[in-house]
Image 1 (spheres, rainbow, N blue to C red):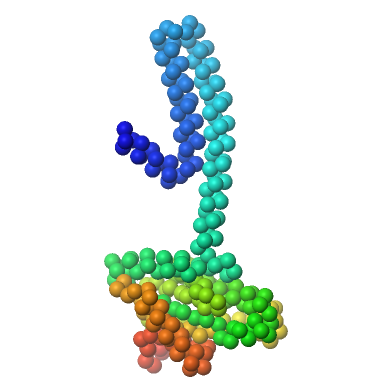
Image 2 (image 1 turned 30 degrees about the vertical axis):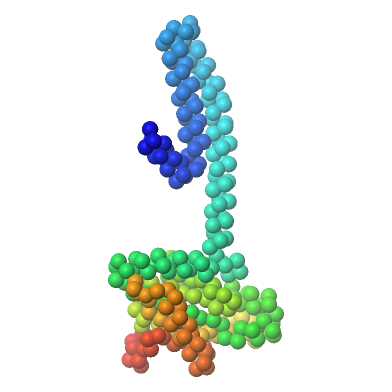
Length: 260
């Protein structure tokens, strides 16, 4: 009995909308069985009419109640899904937030630990972003962030790669199943897309560039270590003049030529 109750509980928990169907079906079945037993024991003279009446009454009560409860569960499930989505995304840009990104990366790291695949972690931020807010206003700055998030999403492979707003004007990317050379090529493509994007509709003469730090990521890596390496590479990119990509470990000229 305990096993049956456990299976029934799991069945309902997997999809709560099954509960009203289960309750309604059980109510109708019990009413039918009860009426049939009553007639079989000779406790009612007009058996067919009694059974039909019992079934009709149980259906009249159970079916509408089941339908109402079903749609209530549908609304609750949709609301919960919306809340989960809001909790997982950055409210401004619509991409993953930091916590969700960390969870996705850890899941991918565990998979790579089994498969031996390689990946890459990228940190990038927008150059001189404070001057954009100061010169064009925070509303324009917000639009820039949303636009850049959209541009990055267009370059990445969905849904295998992950993009998150890391904080302020900084973003984080997970590229799955790539070598460091391939990650460099993807990063340079994104850097070029951002550099060439037109922002005149936000503010005349507004142009954007970004600096990128890239590092290899494997199943034996820790996320903290990879982020630290990417952050150091990003710092070097900004120190070297911004609007460029720096990899850790560094790529030689031949590797860069192959990647491009």
